[in-house]
Length: 43
Image (tube, rainbow, N blue to C red; front, side, top):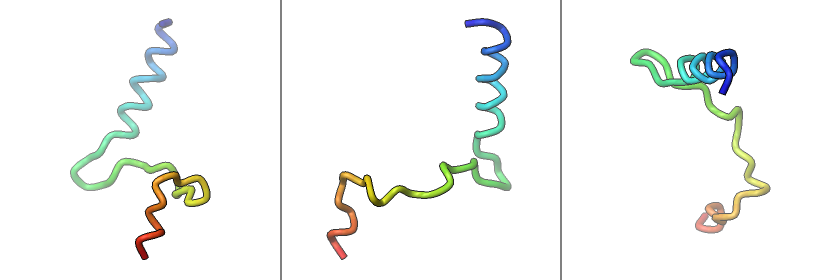
């Protein structure tokens, strides 16, 4: 892995980790249309 790519990975890890006063960023939403667990069928 190149140094530039490794710096990208570390920067992403640093930016996306949990912190005491804020949550880590999420995926932006849930895709219920492709959920294979059928979690909505219990309601």
